[in-house]
Image (cartoon, rainbow, N blue to C red; front, side, top):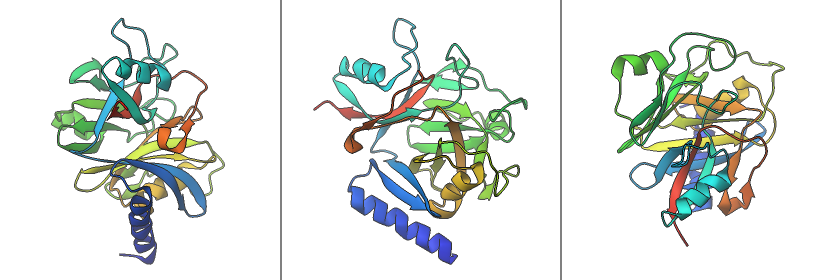
Length: 248
């Protein structure tokens, strides 16, 4: 393990100890860049996706998801936007909610970040998490309780996306997810200031040591973290990803 990897691993341990919970959000720094990082543990945290209410209206905000959960006697833990969407806020690629595929997988290249292959799928299983490159997903058809497709991949089998350029001038506030090698931990990160793809991907590869990581979006990236007294607002969102907690 390199010195940088050791430093990153120790930082993850320190983060977990400081936040004191399996599902936790807190500040995190890598290569002089500050992030807010949230962690979920398989088998302990309930992670879900939401898009529409029972009447078919797009939820579009953290408040709307929280209100929906309140009807179930629950509340929203941390949450963030879960990938790209069309002007009508429908998912650009694959979207699975409670085992129901509501938008199909897109395997062809295309314009924008989503079509910058390889892209991928974040899969929430009953017993863990996966980030899977899209064409691998198409070949394997894994059993995902929830899934969202986005792109580009940030880290593929431990390597940065081949199109990322160090020193790029393209900077945005960005958010994404990386999954541990054993599929038992998912790390959700949002940058606290505009960053390049290369900087953001190195967070997952070098500090968090996630062999697979996926970009969700930039510019419209939002985070809901009640423990930090934070709930970003602004442009209405498409799919939303978050954890479910017991009502207080």
